[in-house]
Image (spheres, rainbow, N blue to C red):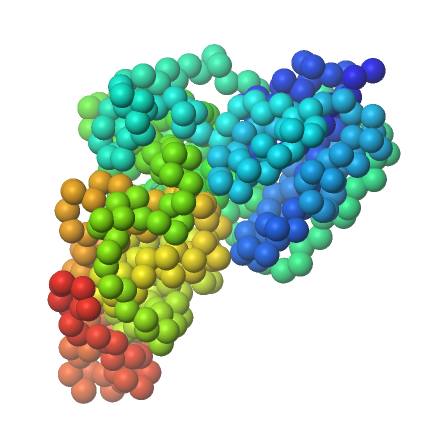
Amino acid sequence: MVIALWWIRRDLRLHDQIALTAALRAADAVIPAFILDPVLRSVSPRRQAFLMAALQALDHALRERGSYLVVRAGPPLETLGALMAETGARLILAEEDFTPYARERDERIAHQLPLHRIGFPTIRHPASIVKPNGMPYRVFGAFRRMWRSTTALNPNSLQPAPIRIPTPPGIPSLPLFLERAERFDDFPPSEEAALERLRAFTEGEEAPIYRYHRDRNWLDREGSARLSPYLRFGMLSPRRAAIAAWQAMERAPHEEARRGASAWLDELVWREFFITLLFHFPNLAERPLRPEKGRIQWREDPQALQAWIEGHTGYPLVDAGMRQLRATGWMPNRARMVVASFLTRALGVDWRLGAQVFFEELLDGDPAVNVGNWQWVAGVGADYASGFRAFNPTVQARTWDSAGRYIRRWVPELERVPDAYVHAPWTMPEEVQRTARCRIGVDYPAPMIREAHGQRKVE
Ligand SMILES: Cc1cc2nc3c(=O)[nH]c(=O)nc-3n(C[C@H](O)[C@H](O)[C@H](O)COP(=O)(O)OP(=O)(O)OC[C@H]3O[C@@H](n4cnc5c(N)ncnc54)[C@H](O)[C@@H]3O)c2cc1C
C-alpha cells in the first residue's frame, strides 16, 4: 500500500486542492500533515491564533471525509523525515510556496526527501508572466494587460472537495490549542465561511461585486469582498475567486455592472503582481524595487512612530485606521493607503518600519503583498512613475467618511463632535469642544504635525 503525505502550508482548503488531488491519485492512503515550524511561530500572535482556528476547522472538514489532520512541531525537514519513517509514507505532495523563506526551505527538503511541489498559491505561476525579453514586469499596467490577455479562466478546471480521503488510523497528532483567546467575528476562520462570503459577493443580479468599483473606497460601508485573510491562508483558492469574478462579468446585467466585476478581478491581479515581484526580487522586504527612488533620508522618530501605532496622531482618519488594525487585524484598503502615506510622506518615517507593524498586526499580512503596497505608497516600488502618492488624511476623511461614522466607531473620543468638525477636530471653537466633551490636547490629541516632513502639507 502506497501512503503519501499531503503537507499543508498556505493552502488550508479542500476545494480546488491540486496537491491533495495528486496525492489521492498517487497513493492508496493520504496523511494530511501540518508542521508547526518554530521559525514561523515568532511572527504575529494574531495570525498564529487565526491559523490554529483555521486548522481546527480543516480537521473538522477532514473528519467528515474519513480523515484527520496530523499536526507535528519542529524543523520541517527532520519532522517530515520522522513522520515518513513512522507511517511508512513514501512521498510528500505540497503546494508550492513562493516566499523567499519557503523557497529556500523547500529546496533543501527536496534534496533529501521525495517532496513533489504541485499547484501554487496564485492563479498564474510567477515565472510564467514575463516580458517578451524574459525580464519580469515592474509596472502593473503592462503586467495586467499580459495577465488578462493570456489567462484562461475555465470553471471546469476547478476541482470539488474530495468526498472521501482514506487515512491510516491512529497517527498521533499534537492538540490544536489557541494560545491567545481571540474571536474572529469579522472573519470566521473556515473554508466554508470563505466560500460563503465569495458566493454572497459574486452571485446574483444584485451581487456587491457589481457595485465594487463605486463602493470599494467608502469607509463607512462594506464595499469590498473582505476575503483577504482567506486568500492569505489559501482557505479560498485564488483560481476559484477569479473564476467567480469572470463568471460575474459574463452574467453582468449591464455594462456598468460588468465594470464592477472587472475591477474586482483586477485586484486579484494586483495580488498576483506583488507575489510575482517578490518571486523575481526576493530582497524586496529590505530593498526597494527602485533603489534610485529609495535614496530618501528617512527620519528616526520613535515617538512619532509610536503615536502612529497607537492611533494618537490627532488626525482622526489615521487614528481610526490604526486603532481598527490593532483591535481587529484588518483595515479597509483606503484607510491602509492613508495611514501608510501619513507615516512615510507626512512623518517621513521609513516604510520598512510601517510594513513591520502591518505584518505583525494584519490577519491577511502577506510578505509580498504587504511590502509591495508599502513600497507603492512610499513611492519607491512598482509603478513609481505614476505619480506622487500623498493622501491628505483630512480630505480623504471628508470624501470617504463624510458623515464621520468610521471615525466615530474607532475613535470614541470624537463621538459627540459635530459633523462639521469631526474630520478636523482641532478647528473646533472652545465652546464646541466643551459641549462635545472633547478638549483638543486633553481628551483627543492636537495634530502631531502641521507641516509634513515630506513635500506636502498634511492638513
Ligand atoms: C500599505 C498597504 C499594505 C497592505 N498589506 C496587505 C497585506 O499584507 N495582505 C493583503 O492581502 N493585502 C494587503 N493590502 C492590500 C489591500 O488593502 C487588501 O488586500 C484589501 O484591503 C483586503 O480587503 P478585501 O478582501 O475586502 O479586498 P477587495 O477589495 O475585495 O479585493 C479582493 C482581493 O484582491 C486582493 N487585493 C486587493 N487590493 C490589493 C492590493 N492593493 N494589492 C494586492 N492585492 C490586493 C486581496 O487579496 C483582496 O482580498 C495592503 C494595502 C496597503 C495600502
